[in-house]
Image 1 (tube, helix red, strand yellow):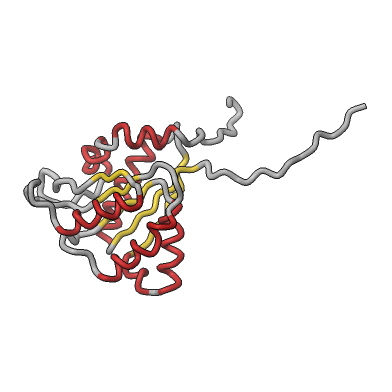
Image 2 (tube, rainbow, N blue to C red):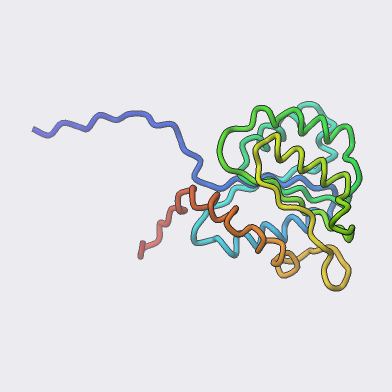
Length: 188
């Protein structure tokens, strides 16, 4: 006699690499899109991505800031797309402080998509702040990258390619922990 196998409830596992993108305006959002496009193009056969987009001015609203903090705390990758290289605003500092203590364990990274031509020995105050956040949240940090050869901000996958190539073993280690995306095609 065949008996139905006993079903046990299993908590759903997030099978996607979650990417939280914090941007200021249309230009910085475009930079984030370029980086995300490049990641998807490079890893599309290996990883499924889930993106969460938040504009920095949303963080002034208490409920939106709390929702953004929850998503950031759960993210595998956090992209900060900004034009500010000086000390971050009090709102942004408070927002980071609101969630870094509740960040789940595991690998993750903070990617600073701010461009700067500042000499390397003198890191901008904004980058020093992000280095501290990365340390406190136990995130790997990928820092500021130079402007494109034409002096403009990166806005295309080609422009961000040199920066994304710095991901190296950090991203490969993180992305290899995630299961491959499901394939439901006829030849799978």
